[in-house]
Length: 55
Image 1 (tube, rainbow, N blue to C red):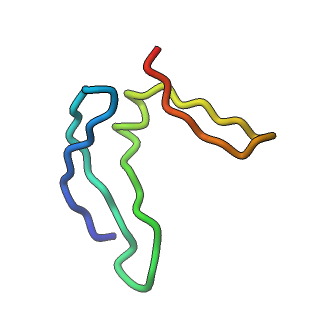
Image 2: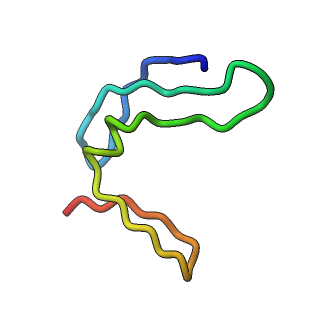
């Protein structure tokens, strides 16, 4: 995996995190679990939507 340090701003809150991508071939950018643990994420399977909550 290739790793890059990034600053992510959500709801006027800045967080530092690592963003990873596969070393070979095309792949999706992966946001680290550290950031995901700091956010409240709502996943609506029926609508196929994902939202970040500030509450």
